[in-house]
Length: 395
Ligand SMILES: Cc1ncc(C[n+]2csc(CCOP(=O)(O)OP(=O)(O)O)c2C)c(N)n1
Ligand SMILES: [Mg+2]
Image (cartoon, rainbow, N blue to C red; front, top):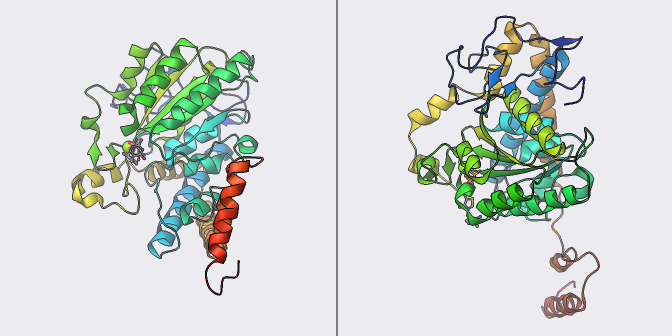
């Protein structure tokens, strides 16, 4: 890792973790889980992965506050989108509630040159990539295809087909490697997001094989939120998901996905290994989908309230707030200011969603190919004639 980056070394201005040597194991945590911030907001100095890698993350106070701000903003924007769907303004919404730390931690660990391949739930990563959060709302409102330029933001389009983006990411990462863009600190790494359910897909297993044997600079980032719609984790696997990596020939690690600091540290480490030519790895971010699968799902049909309550106690934002308060890194005025920013941004988001114009039906042909095609031109003309055939048509 480059000098001066969070998660590397303790340099001037950075707040070192508390002196006492506490690791995940000594803190009474799960030794299988890399954790740097407990649900009670207690900071752990370092934690070890299954291959003995030591993970630490030292941030400046400003960086800690920045991560907290990201978490709160992302949750608020997500809540606003859910409300907009309930009021009929979006066709559907896939909420990230509960998964903010996994997404903000990994999203902030990306360097500018790194490329990300999301599913349909990565609104927090999208936010970290600097994309206007209005963009996915256009997609879920059904008025555009998402709208952002994947090359400009180094964030591919949302992918609904489960697991397909892991193959796209593998091909892209193989290209990065063949173009000689790996090997140094300025090398490019690629990250592919997917869920626990996706690990049962053929695409994902093929991606594992190809990435492994071609040494692709790729981080497989699995958010294990315990469910694939109504299917619980035990219907996907008999072993912890991170252990699957070993059979494909690359390292795997399980991180506390509700811990933004550990999610950052583990992802940064894996990305840097990839960019230096050390090949792929798998991160299993152990987390929980606090809401419904999407707004068309009712989770009370297949899971019990006590399970949700148990995860509520591991909330990613609450533990960060407790930590910032205890360490006097942030005061009441800061928390109030963040809340106010989140409120103002969500109001602004709502206003812009309501103002989104409905597209002309014929524009659906516009973005199929960059330069069109004769066949498509004919289809467009045919469709236009059809629309014009209606009495009183403005077309
Ligand atoms: C190839 C394919 N099969 C089925 C579906 C329907 N489907 C949409 S989401 C989903 C569950 C995905 O679960 P998981 O991978 O755990 O991701 P999560 O939604 O929990 O983030 C399924 C089966 C689909 N979109 N694509
Ligand atoms: Mg899932």
